[in-house]
Image (cartoon, rainbow, N blue to C red; front, side):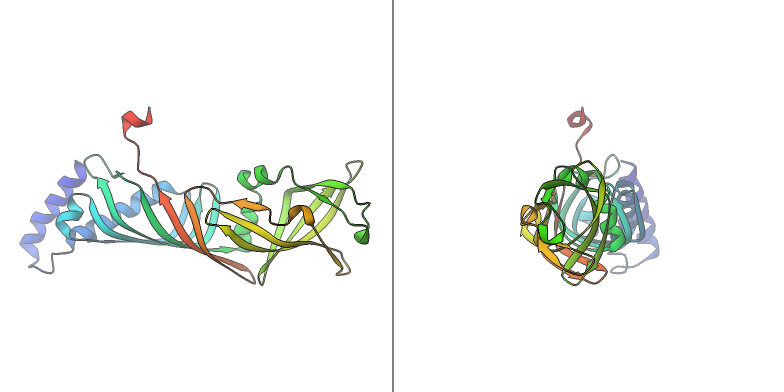
Length: 257
């Protein structure tokens, strides 16, 4: 209710100071910083956050927004970081009586750019560590192995982003548990909208010789049910992703119990 009163007060002041159509976008301009504050409350970190609300003033005042464009840099959301983000959502419904509550889910177009640092943050995340905790590979004899399966330790893995490939420096545990350094090079592609997968993963020796890792071929990397990927581009130092993200409706107090 406080936000609607603020909008009405602004409307009265605006009609006195500004003739139409200069006043026609006043509610949209007022709502942008309010929504910007709400977005900041949903993430752990974001720099240079820009929020642009588009829609007729009468509809915006009642929480019916035609489109919202959001962009920012150095984003951290649920422990996952990104160099930059741009997002566009349409047909947004907000309950403005008690703060800003999203009353229905929104499927928003999203574009992300990830640096090597962002990739390494993801490798260290609990989500990735949980997915990979049981990964094992068979060390080929050509690289000094004895063809036995050994677990991969990715807890301190570091990645480099090459053209169309990722290079990951990790550790394997040999027969008696002693650690040995390991270098893996793999392509990455979209398997389906909710999964990425490794493409032709290979072990690379210090002398440049390599051998395929059959156990990791087509290994899925889960993105979660709310994120759908349409395009992936890997260039030296950066990964670019385009797709959509499902922003869930905010539960009411009764639903949250």
